[in-house]
Image (cartoon, rainbow, N blue to C red):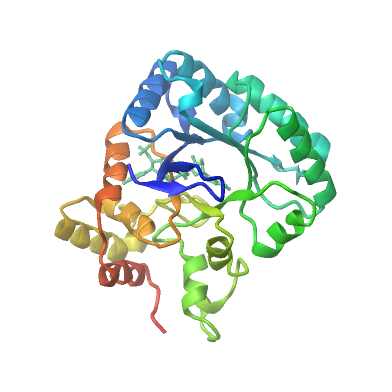
Length: 306
Ligand SMILES: NC(=O)c1ccc[n+]([C@@H]2O[C@H](COP(=O)([O-])OP(=O)(O)OC[C@H]3O[C@@H](n4cnc5c(N)ncnc54)[C@H](OP(=O)(O)O)[C@@H]3O)[C@@H](O)[C@H]2O)c1
């Protein structure tokens, strides 16, 4: 398993991480089997959020872990908070601290390896976030802190008060969802792709050694579905299969290899709950994708080269 730096922590984490958003599609025994399989393949990093399955994903994970011989200290468990679904975003100190207590209770764990703020809160007060992080760190409940779906200036605003390093930023990225790459290519143009939707977050994270965690690596739009077998992405699918054949791997493997080829050294959050698909995803770590092939896949998704 390829390893990448986890922010500036000095820790090395697997380039593939398990996204646990869909964990409740498995029962306890199925989840335990999945965890064993992941860890046996070097994937010992698990991403949660307090809202996944309305908390049920964390509960199931905690129970399933106990059915395995995996030791807590041998895995990275990360969760996110700050979304109150359909109502608001909440980065208040009270909400962050209370959320972590709920997360730890559901996971039945003493600490999180990382806590990320899930989605920007328009009413964020960085002083409060700093107080929450300090309290959680002091209490030994959270070891590292990060963000999700945040622009550079939003991270800078937090850093005005937050003293802990921001180790990760979770961002949507797939071969069919490339805006953070595209606006860096179509600079200063009147094209659709030139629109800067994220404040050059890709370059910022590389500059600041913040690990990008690519979420929904097979989805398009607002998690509308996988782009595989989707007629709107016929050319992309054909190219992934064709280039995959050249490297002796499947289109699924190639879609992940395309993400891992980016020199930002990202982590890919794989959401599959299917063991065969998981294996295909892990194979991407062994693919050395040539530059020209990376660009061919990029363009096959409808992107242009200026
Ligand atoms: N920070 C955020 O705002 C945010 C938002 C969303 C997600 N996330 C994180 O990212 C993780 C991954 O997200 P995700 O689950 O959307 O990622 P994903 O890996 O792109 O999607 C997984 C889903 O696609 C299906 N799929 C995969 N390959 C397929 C194929 N060839 N044909 C048909 N279906 C296929 C999977 O089905 P099978 O199970 O059958 O393989 C599964 O239902 C989440 O678990 C979560 O940790 C973060």
